[in-house]
Structures are given as structure tokens and as C-alpha cells.
Length: 393
Image (cartoon, rainbow, N blue to C red; front, side, top):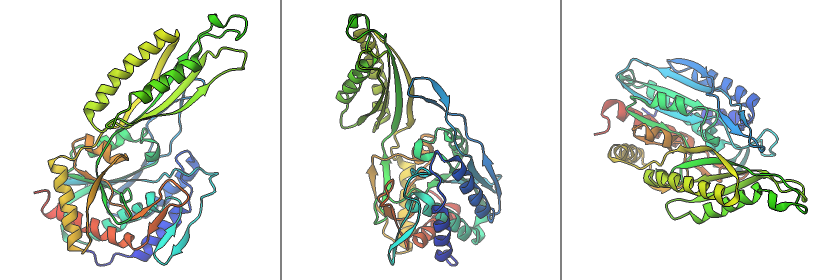
């Protein structure tokens, strides 16, 4: 099953892909990355296509709406008529913009490389392909099928690919997502909280700061008051992060406009629903107390991901597959989110840190532990084999 896994080729692919800047906003770089991935995944016995992103509306600093551009998503369908089918997902985008200084790959020691996206997740993409090539060499592969989806916007919430993820998850037996391990030792992420991003526009009334300030309605103060009160709503199961306020005017003008942006991380579905009710009450208070109008854009984009009985059986299967390879597999809950949240919300069991071992992601210190390329490819190949021949008992 694991014979023929070519770590040198995996590393070569990872290096080539990591040297392509594919920051979420770099559409030209994403186009280049998508083309490279399409060529590489064409070796699988299925159809490869590039899917256009779903339109996404964002809020500008002046409160107006605009369509935010995104790259295309890669989709590979293998044996679409098979009765038992799996979903494997990854993302081609990184957090590093085209003008970011972190653009190249270098060796840190004999087993470790530093480079943009090496861990998160160009290495994981290489693992997906190598694992599927190994799986296809098994005679049991023809018994099942799978879809591979590699999106271009995971790092900003998968807003232009969420509908595609939900469509592909429907009816799948199980799913694997190739985010890097939660810890450099290979620990998997288990239960996850959710995430929601919000933009709130505040519309007040301009006035002269000296002659008639009483006639003004200060939108900036309203936004700041809202941010402070949001922070006071935070508790252990609901981290809230007011992140940015856009707005203001000249020093002698009462500002009539502001936009507050914030993120929440609900750990439970009930917590997310309770926040929405409390937040609506807060906005009504702010409007009445400050004499402004508010408009809210956004919401929960990553639902909380508890681990139910069927999902736990998938974790156990991965652990047992690791044991067969002399790999110790453990897991822990995490506050991070990913496309695994979206897949789990569709009722599909998913393990979402099947990618390489590494760390310091989202920083210029990002690193990948090179031997984990082969380790994780072998692990996935065995997991797929067991899913195909036995399943989640």
C-alpha cells in the first residue's frame, strides 16, 4: 500500500509550489498555482476542472459594498458513480501578499525547511496527490470514488468556496482535510470552535466641533462604544476580538461615519445563537444611546465543530492506521478553524489536520519537517484503504 511513495518528488513539488506567491488577494499568482495543480493532479484517473468562485460582497472603509475578487478553485472527480465516495480538501492560498518579503524556501537543517506555505499548506497538497497515487495502486481503489477540492480562499474564510464545499460534502462517506498538524509532533486537531467575521457601519450626523457639536451624532464614538461593549460580552466559551475601526473626520468636524470590524470564536452552536441575540440588542442600544443608524454585514462563516460518535470513529481509524505504520497519533481540541468546520456542519465525519508536521504558520518563521511528507502520505494511503475495505465500524 505504501510502497512507491516518492518523498523526493513530494519535496520537489512542495518547493515549486511554495515559490509561487498565492496570497489570497494575488489573483495572478493563484491562477498560476491553480494551473500547476491542475497539471499535477491530471495524473489521477478522473476529470480535473477549475471552478469559478462564488461572488463575495465585502464592506469598504466608507461603508459601501463591493465585490471582492477571488481565484478559481480546483476540483478533481474520480469515479463519481461509485457507491462509497470520499472528500479530500486543501487550499492553495497563503496569507502572504505578493509584496510580502517572505517569498522563498531555505533549509534550516537536514530535516527542516522554512518557506511560505510549506506547512500551510503546499506540503499538504503534495501529500494529497502522493497518497492518492499510492491508493490507486491498490486493487481496492476501484470499489470507491472521491472528490479533491483545493480552494483559493481558505485563509480568508472560504466565502467564495463555501457553497462548493457543502455541495461536495453531501453524501460523502468521510472526509480528510490537509491542514498541517496542530503541533509539530503530529498531534491532530480534534474539536474546533467556530468563527464569525462582522463589519458594522455607523451613520451619524456631521456638525461643527466648536459651533454646534450638540447637533452632531458622532459615529466614531458610537463605534468605539460598541467595540468596548462587545469586549465586555466576551466569556470563556465566546472569545470576541474587536479588530479595527475605519472612519473619522477633521478635528473640527463631528464624524458622521465609521465601520467597526470584529471576530468572534463561539465554541458551541448555542453560544453562537446566544451571541446573535445579544448583539442585536446591543445594536439597538447603540442606535438609541448615540442617535446613529447601524448596518451589520457578515456572520458565522465557520460553525463550531464538535466531534460526534461517527467522527470519533474516523479519528480512531486514523490512530489505528498510524499504529500500523509505527506512527503515534494523538489529538487535542483547538481554537483554530478551517474547512473542516464547514464539512462537519454537513454531518460528514472529518479529520482536518492530515497534512505535514510543521509550525509557525502565518509568519515568516513557518517551517515544515521534511520527513513528514512521506509519513503523512503513507498514513493517508492506509486510511483510504481501510475506509474502502472496512469503514467506520
